[in-house]
Length: 313
Image (tube, rainbow, N blue to C red):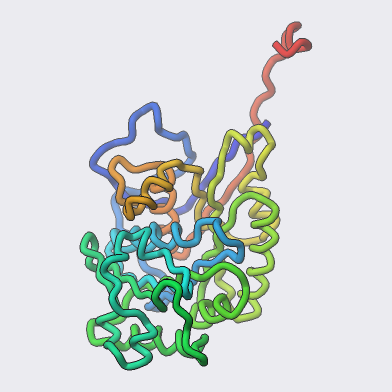
């Protein structure tokens, strides 16, 4: 039997006013650094695409929670929902009623770029930009070059360039995927520990590298340690060995995800925090410093077997 231990050189220093109840604390081997702010690595703005290939693995949830975590760390963030016709990022952020203009209206000259940006009232340094309205189609000719122009416009706007531009990539590897990854210089690959998701993630990794994106890190979502111990789910170490990618974060299975989605209130804003919310915050911290974590398997001591163990005792 094995247990999963996670190590990180730079865990997230987020503090919360209410401590976690002792019964719910997890025993994770890490070195906590609560006394400093993360140092932003790399040239700004950092253009990060969050993708997976397979749908339903948590790309949009990751975008919402990592994006808001970055804003809470003091960095300016613009999150772009690049899913044409099936956008959901505005719902997870609770901003659906405030999206009046999209990138399509900006390109058509119907509004300015600053009018299409929706500023979060909870964190004013976080802004949302949607490509199109629900159930709409993009005009012919919209592609990677249009999104590159959009990113360049965000860099050159009067209010100053954001620290992070995060692109929520649509599922699949068709034209929408190609469009979303075109302006990015780094990627976060979201996967779950199942063979279908891993096969798609491996395929997407190859496409990202062919597009010139070499800085690729992964987030393993919906991890259940009880199933890993029972050998019913692949461990994070197995996933890392299969994909060969740096590990940005491990998100445990959490029923609070559904509640937060329905309320339009991301997990990282919960107080007291949930395990998944803390994991997203730690992933955001590592993203800032271009850090990664390691997953190792520690073998447990075998239990002593008595006479009745033969009968299952």
